[in-house]
Length: 392
Image (cartoon, rainbow, N blue to C red; front, side, top):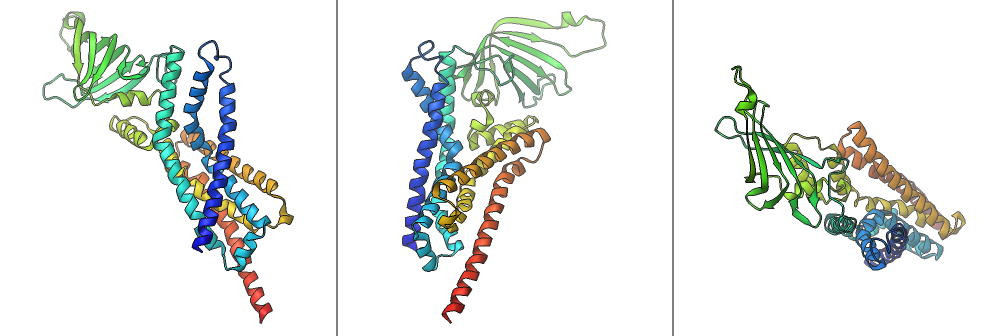
């Protein structure tokens, strides 16, 4: 069986590779065509090809389960049409042994998908975003916020009274390609009673590792606590201009950069760290948790896709040619992709548990594959019993 396992795994991997190249090439062509209006005006054709190439890792990650399904369906159908699978069954290949064989290419493809989603795809997407913002002279701002990035930053409580314990930071924009520099800052600091005690304004800032953010030419407005005396609040407040201020903070540039990209484009480790930051500052993290668990379970769908492809090996040529079976596999893959996206949106809207949102689409496909394999196992048992009685 080791020889058969190597043979089946090799055929599935080769077929998956060809399907993957075909799908990604088709999608890359449309990505390149979508840049037609900018070619010659904003940048050259070589730059358009480079931007398209930077998008390839994310495309590979997205279509990997579908490519695995189509590659496995093609392999199983071809083995059945050439009567190779019939010989394997006569030699004692059961559906469960076939499932064990399919585990080998599944593990290889799952490992490749995890590597793409964790390292290559986030780096390529970040580089592409930086290139886009440089070419179009854009300012990086938080998605959906024209005022920039808003971040809540907890400050360790000081022993002296009147020190800030909660800080809200508004960064107008980030500098493309320079993740440690930002545009204008507005900082609102509150004490433990919820009173606003200080407001900072700065035209720019840069991050110094281990120390915090250096606010250049800052304006510092200090506000006193509300009291019941008759002294006007204006006389109690003070303002200083052109101050170079070092602002200690655990808010690293990566935290700000997270808000400029989609959660689905982030790696598992980045999502984990940012979710921890949101929980620490008592902010909602539902969308990022859905993205995290989707990243965890999405590559595992490859194993389910290969399991779904297994019944195609038991269909004879009268059930349709290879092209019809591939079309059926394509429809199954598209259904899974649509179901996965639908549950992601519904989970965020209805505040479902993030793990449930990520697991349900894969579980539905796994149940379908398990039912099909069970039916095949029953039919295989009846066939063996019938052959045994005939020989007797």
